[in-house]
Amino acid sequence: MKCYELQGPGGVDALALVDKAVPQAGPGEVLVGLKAATLNYRDLLTVKGGYGSRQKFPLVPVSDGAGVVEAVGAGVRSFAPGDRVIGSFFESWLGGEPSEARMRAALGGSVDGVLTEYRVFPAHALVRTPDHLSDIEAAALPCAGLTAWSAVVKLGDLKPGQTVLTQGTGGVSLFALQFAKMCGARVIATSSSDAKIARLKQLGADVTLNYKTTPDWGKKARELTGHGVDLVVEVGGVGTLNESIRATRIGGTIAFIGVLAGPASSDTRLPLMVMQQQRLQGVTVGSIEDLQALCDGISLHGVKPVIDKVFAFDQVKAAFAHMASGAHFGKVAIAIG
Picture 1 (cartoon, rainbow, N blue to C red):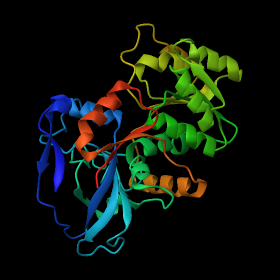
Picture 2 (picture 1 turned 180 degrees about the vertical axis):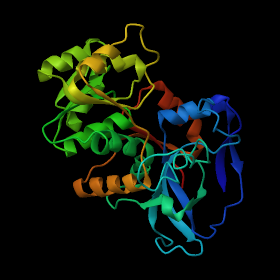
Picture 3 (picture 1 turned 135 degrees about the vertical axis):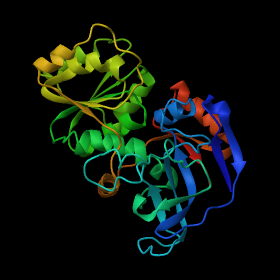
């Protein structure tokens, strides 16, 4: 089989396409022929060696993949050859509260990921692909989809009639918009591009703000709602946190996910967060149980991930470059098999 290995922290130039023997499924394991993968910002950090001390080399990068069961090991009754499946981001987090042990095995970081033609998974770490999704679409779920689900549905506990603010047009943000509408909420969406704003409206955004022409978008969102939004899906990180605090109502929640916007200014509004009794909720993907809930939910409502562009398996470096450019709207995908 062919797979990509990251030989060291040298960026995409350190990615090498290598030949390996197809692995065998042992007891309790499943061999999956991977058909598709999608990229996350975290994957860009990983190829630059920015994923911390748990990152090993050589490493098969990328966490999000979908495929078809090729063979099952002894004792596996839950899957059979031909089943379409997706793998969980955290292989050891079956359910319940997060812990160091449950979050130790993270695909494409501390353990090999899915940028390969075949991979062996523990049977418990697989979830059946929703019938209404293609493999490309399903490959968007394990990290981006589940992170947005956790932010909006599980940890955000969004209710019908509430208001959510989303930032930009990456995978997590678009999923958050879709899940918020699925829950009956109102969405204020931001972007720096008027062309992308038009597409956000097509996805169901109720209000849109161009954060280039409206740099005080947090203040504007608060004015538009009268009291502030109930939930901000914060993917910018410390660089956008001040405006998120301004946007959020008293007692509201900021689901803190990303690191896209760079360092914070020295003029932090954290005291305002304290005075308004806001909750800063860290979000790191979710469990296998949560991934199943996500699949059940989008199957019921017919939600489909937004795919920006699909690259061939021999165009992986171009896919990473496209992701890094920020030009994408939705998920950047790679067709594997």
